[in-house]
Image 1: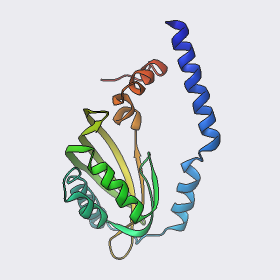
Image 2 (image 1 turned 180 degrees about the vertical axis):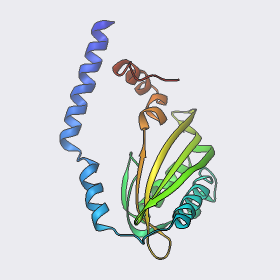
Image 3 (image 1 turned 120 degrees about the vertical axis):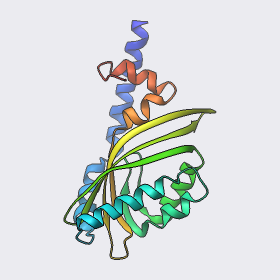
Image 4 (image 1 turned 90 degrees about the horizontal axis):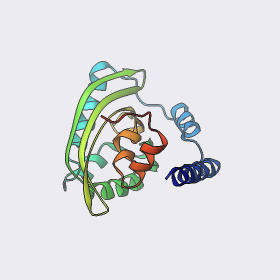
Length: 190
């Protein structure tokens, strides 16, 4: 068993290192977009309004209303990085939303807080949902913060999500969750 575990960890480490070489870091994309994309300067009330609209739209995830409500939040040209994927065109984001909408149900998104600095709103949220994958449904729950900039039409032109996919997603995936537990035994699951 120890040999298998060592081989598995070595293989995953090698694959990870190879992926690091070919997949660019999001950090440089984020830095460029953050400097290039300027939203309107915000007030406390505007930041709260952004958070309220954001949470209201994502509370419809998994329903027929979601794609339309969520797409109304975004401008045609944008930067969005949700930790797992990145988009610069609304049409690609909407296509992503359609795929998400088919895999989730029982969504609950709560606004924890909304604050701002200059043109960036920081929306702290909790999201729980059921996710269908490989013929099974898993309940997911995660916390995150979305940095959001809007244009004068109140459309999102910049969004960077900060959340921990390890606890919100990876631990729930078949095989990956078990491998994750082997590789990072110090990361405690409650």
